Image 1 (cartoon, rainbow, N blue to C red):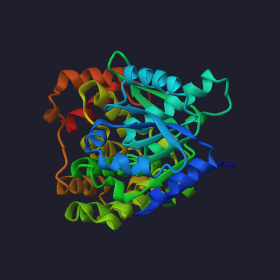
Image 2: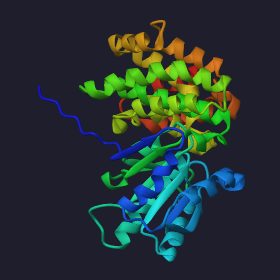
Image 3: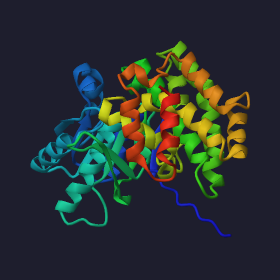
Length: 352
């Protein structure tokens, strides 16, 4: 049977301490002269790093600054679209975590639609400050007006360039950095376990998982070591070369179902659910999960990941976020899809 692979990451990826120097050349290459800068409240309040980004624009300017909250609320995206339209921008620049990046993706496409550019979104460059790697995918998540997680998938959402500069991540709280590292682990695991044949992404996913196991504890031990943080960023990138299937895996879907509704960050939902979802999947694809165990170390992938989460001091119990069986029963009943709700409820309860 013939198979096919579609490479779906941004065209240009720059990495390493000091990579911010590539922002001005990328802006010039993409003919971006007036950009909307999407970021989050904590970075805006910190101030210094945002000013470094502004200082690296070269001949471009950023007449609009948009602040996006966790889980990218629809109301904030709508307001950002109007703000960017009024400022007359010709591109977007995101600086922050997945929520800011996803919101910028959506606005870039909606702005293009308003201008009759049906073939592409406005140019978008991202400077990520977490390991959730939203910048690598042609999809975007947001929270709808009902408070539930929703998504948009469009090839035009794919970014034009990404800049991984570890110097710009030093203000990211360590708990957030590490939990999004587990999110990256989740990408690697679920991409590897996705249906079909994908040898290219499998090779990178396994290498990314190995690197995350080696480098995340080192990041916790040395928070200011930009070389270690760069290694974290490279590992996260490697886990996400099959973004569509990786982001649609069981742990991701179950996490999104409770995350936005109950205010649980994306990275934390992976900490809570990944080991339990992996044990569930091991019953259905034992050979594939055994190969994951070779990458995680002991042969027991779920156990290795659960021990890593504990070692990093990250959350492990859904109950810590005020959820109980009634909320989990509702979440599982609303998911449907590939697996019966009773089996999904079992996974949720094991994570309780």
